[in-house]
Length: 349
Image 1: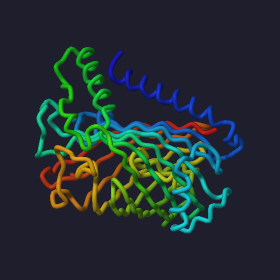
Image 2 (image 1 turned 90 degrees about the vertical axis):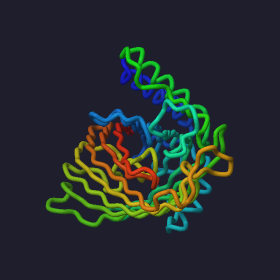
Image 3 (image 1 turned 120 degrees about the horizontal axis):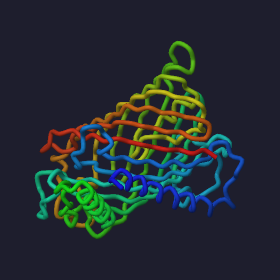
Image 4 (image 1 turned 60 degrees about the vertical axis):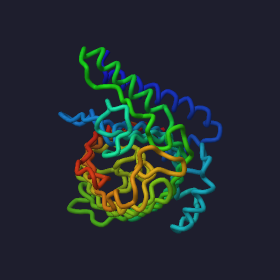
């Protein structure tokens, strides 16, 4: 058994838990809805060939349920509904797709062996969360409102990362990678409640040549909460297109996708580019609880860019997505780029 096999087992376990959770909600979910399914998402820098620096955005895992009507698990839906009104959602059940997501993300500095606070690199930080989302879309436009509630500063990521590194060293008979020694200095160490409201709008700009072979869309979004920023983006798909433009699978673990679409027999290559103007980022600057390592407003980059290229394969009820993602530095003291791979699987009911 190697490290990738272990990660596969972890993903399988997460998927099994997610499916069990879904089965508990079947009594309230409408089995005949067209836009129903489950997505399992993994981000990891090890998935980029010849690249495994294990720093910055080191890992993200999420499980998402989506339904075509107002049924399912929606603890935050009241707040999302109010936010949706700002974008003009009339809350028609026939037009709105809903999603519920559970996820976690982790960030680390470059030197994992140093147990002392590191003041010249990004701090350790982690988030576990649940989110609810509403999307209303047609052929040309899509609008989305999302509310996220989570905890930063827990010890879960420390345990998972340490065990993965220990297992890899045992299997490979090597001294690398070292255990992360600085999680006690993470942002809001010990745990703190946080939230985020995100509003997005996307528009299909062009369909070229034969319909269903190439399209281009633009988007804008604003986030308020632990990540406060505004962003604009552009995305392109090319291939055999059968799903709507707004379902392009860009960065679903963090803040990218609207919602997945119903699976069809399709394949396409895609690319996306996004620019953020950052107002505040709790995972770098800290929140209410005191953090040993954090950065002031004049130490963070205000303009941050990220992008991805990927391949989406849809067949009958399943969709597979493979991507390579990159992001510019988030701190002025570091001029390095981040890179990670993404592997996503979606099953549609």
